[in-house]
Image 1 (cartoon, rainbow, N blue to C red):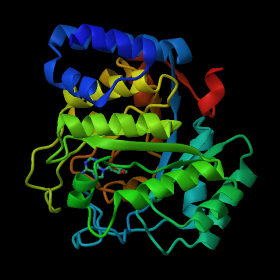
Image 2 (cartoon, rainbow, N blue to C red; image 1 turned 30 degrees about the vertical axis):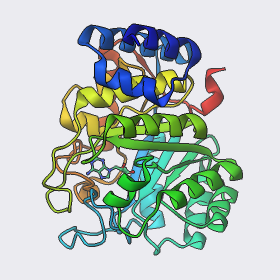
Image 3 (cartoon, rainbow, N blue to C red; image 1 turned 180 degrees about the horizontal axis):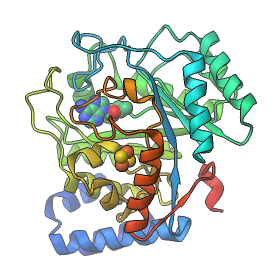
Image 4 (cartoon, rainbow, N blue to C red; image 1 turned 180 degrees about the vertical axis):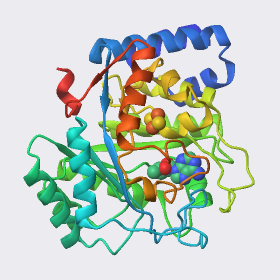
Length: 348
Ligand code: 5AD
Ligand code: FES
């Protein structure tokens, strides 16, 4: 096998076997990586040109009943300072976001049963009623089919649920009382209901191998989601995985590029976790094929509390500041902001 042949094949066929992906991940030189990045950027340009979509992120609750071993807002992280936003507070964030030009709001939170279907339906339908030209994305973990359906009926357009890792054993090792099969069932349910669906994984999880990363890519290929969120694992001292090494920017960029070539039209965010590891991390992701950024719209007084990992960027910054900052960063690498809804098929 030759690395360059594999890169060519991936570029032409948008697929590789597990063995081929593992070979790439373990043999690629810096020069070959540059060629991969070139192809992934060309592919992004082919469908999206120089456009980067903006989504306003509202972290509305950091209460969580789960105990993911990597996550700083896990239930057993007793030092976490918990908060919930009211419907009015969420609407206020949207109001500011709309004024700043955002046309997608991403409502993200821990798995917090306080937000019943009834409450969520009220919040979502109020947003959709007040602003008819916005898309609403929900990211609140695993719920029942009925709950997902209620959220969809209320007007939500998209749902983000990272699969975190596509390997059963690793999935069980980094979670408590959770299984990859129920995760996959949720993703299938979300698709069946008609959401634009986002999956994704972390890079550099302790115990993750090139084989497992290949499984992540092949899982994504078979799921064929509309969006894929990929970021480096960043250890949080107050979690069970706090003592391990985190993922690297370089490895994350490779996985972003491979994802762009496996799923050419996918919406691929340049994640905050990358910007946290490296001041230029988000720009680097845009240069290898990412085409979405999700600046924070949460009220500044709660930002620090949504601490999935430590040293998260932007916790002190007003929404307007992030809006400008990100646009400058996007322009600095030759791209331009598109404030539209940015639906999956808007490239057509
Ligand atoms: N490092 C990096 N990413 C994390 N996430 C949660 N905890 C961490 C961490 N310590 C990611 C998960 C989750 C998303 C919202 O944040 O992938 O799905
Ligand atoms: Fe928030 Fe740069 S994106 S300060």
